[in-house]
Amino acid sequence: MRLLVFQHIDCEHPGSLRKFLKADRIEWDAVNLHAGDRIPELEDYDALWVMGGPMDVWDVEDHPWLVPEKAAIRTWVRDLEKPFLGLCLGHQLLADALGGTCGPQRPPEIGILDVELTEAGRKDGLFAGLPARQKFLQWHSVNVAQAPEGAIVLASSDICRVQAMRIGQHAWSMQYHAEIEPDTVANWGEVPAYHDALLAALGEDGLTTMQSAADANMPAFLSCAETLYRNFMRQVSGQVSG
Image (cartoon, rainbow, N blue to C red; front, side):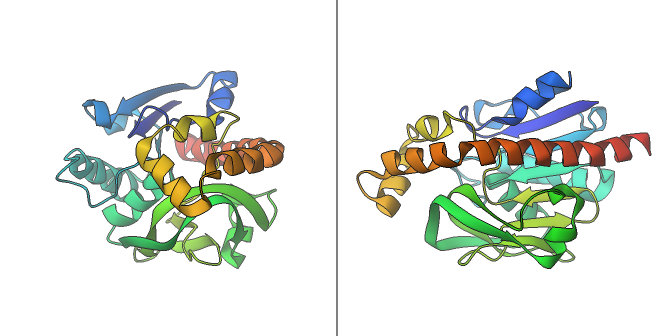
């Protein structure tokens, strides 16, 4: 099994999910689009993960690689119909690539906040074994305003309707960060765009506030990450064997 990962900034990688990949001896290749890496032949891979980043889906003039990335996502999901997982920006890119729309999140969701599974989400295999309501790290000022045609909304929050969605039977995405690990907040807090947004939302002590909340919830975050990983890999196994 081979995994392809699209990354948009050095500090936003698969996070805690990496240790499960290592334990399972799963090969994975990171494409650092922001660094000029070219997208390889998609047919050589069994699953695609698309991570987060500080840019927005419409920033194609500043980040022209967004155009071929969206085309690759569209090919992967619509034509190849292989397993896909998108997180934060990856969630928004999936929506945009497939005809949905993204827009400003007002107010921004930044902090350790509640997300609740919809009725469809509680029945979805990706979330099997997880509580219907759970806290996650949120750090976004853009949301999926309109999900693509045929998308199933799997999770919501009080101010963001499309927190998670599924396209068909093989593509999932989440606005929140299930991949968080102990050093995530500190690392992301060094990114100027993230740092400024954090202080605007939580005040001058925002980084400390976020880190304390993340530390308190870390056991639940890591347990959730493993469950999501195992559930996703079961879907991959079905796709590859089929």
